[in-house]
Image 1 (spheres, rainbow over the protein chains, first blue to last red):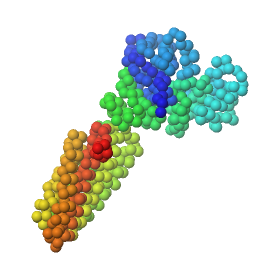
Image 2 (cartoon, each protein chain N blue to C red):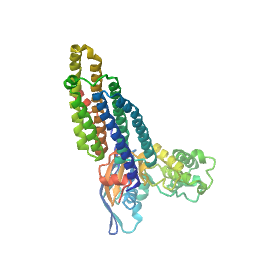
Image 3 (cartoon, rainbow over the protein chains, first blue to last red):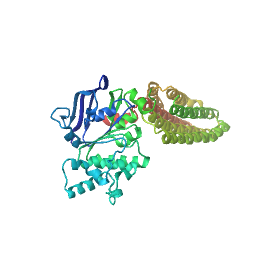
Image 4 (cartoon, each protein chain N blue to C red):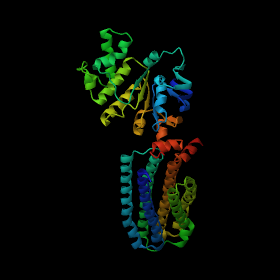
Amino acid sequence: MSRKHNKLEAINLDAYYGDFHALKGINIAMEEKNVTAFIGPSGCGKSTFLRTFNRMNDYIDGFRTEGDILLDGKDIYTKEVRVDELRKEVGMVFQKPNPFPKTIFENVVYGLKIQGISKKAVLEEAAEKSLKRAALWNEVKDNLNKSALALSGGQQQRLCIARALAISPSVLLMDEPASALDPLSTAKIEELIYELKNDYTIVIVTHNMQQAGRVSDNTAFFYMGELVEYSKTKTMFTSPQDTRTQNYITGRFG
Amino acid sequence: MPHIDVELEKLKKKLLEMWDLVEYQLHSGREAMLKADQVMAEQIIKRDRKVNQFDVKIDRMCENFFALFTPVAVDLRMVLAVLKINANLERIGDTAEGIARFAKKLDAPVNEDLLEMTSLLPMYEEAMSMLNDCRIAFKTNDPVLAKTLIKRDKGLDKIYRKSDRIVTKYMAAHPEKISEALAVLSIIKKVERVGDQVTNIAEEIIFYRDAKVVKHKQDKKKKKD
């Protein structure tokens, strides 16, 4: 069996918010078409780290990084890299579903339209494909012109996933994508992640240990800006190597 | 103490209570055998029901713990170990009951020469001492002590392997004592099983504490040879 190549990598990465040292010497490599979960207590740097992969932190005053972040082996923090191009490759889904106040159809094709694609047939095909991939098509196919805001929370989140998929990224970043959803919607999102990993590299930040266990292949535990432990999820949840990891995942922290 | 630790302590306490009962059963089995005490043998057989009740209760407690706490890491290994130790203790309880059934059939205390030749008594003592040390290893979370038990089991195996020949010889010389000799042979076999079960429990303690699987290591070595 051929080894998968490293889709995302961080090499000696440090990140700062002004004087605050948010990420300390992070080294990690994530293989393509795998799900990696980032876990750790609030403020440990896991969301900051997630956002370095599509440069979402660039908008924050005083934020800077040292070290390298690689996508397919190429540094994404060089001057040559255009952030809009980067984000076509690296999509993102947030904690709270954030559909635009537009129709379901308009939401899904929004990114494509920005790219200048206006042909109706192309947009319709892309919308159907993305909604199917996000496991939402059957629920909305007869109401594509309905407002996205009329959907339930779980449906809105799947719509956001469809919107992210429409621009054909290869990486999907998810920042607690199910934490605002009920158990049934959560299960749907988790099933979806399981399906999507056949084609996408997925990184998910979660506070739910069982969710990390269910959806991810590898898990990274962060604490106070450090990557404490990174291993196969099975190993981490049965025999973690670091006492801090053990204390955190068994709920005995602090 | 965090709630999860309170529940784990309850589980551990219940298992140690069962352990006490099983040790008592095994100890009584030896007394019943040596004295051919049929009343005592009958009591042991009846008391095995209590061992079985512990087995069911501990299984249920583990099931609830899994459902309510979804344990991971050391907690998960602890509950998995408790489940397996529970099963092994229950089997040792059955063994004690089996010994009592043989003791019940004895007309008189077992012939001293036969006991001496087969080394049944030192073997029995060693098995009980191993079970007790294993209890200490579990109670004090001591994988080093647990490892020593795996080695000690070899001593019991040695006595067992020799017993066939010794008992056959004894039966040839004393044809009138064949049924007694057969009972002794069966008890030796049962005590040898106790050693195996203590070894299984010791392996679970090592798994729980060190996250290392040591069982079937011997099988692998043998295959390599």
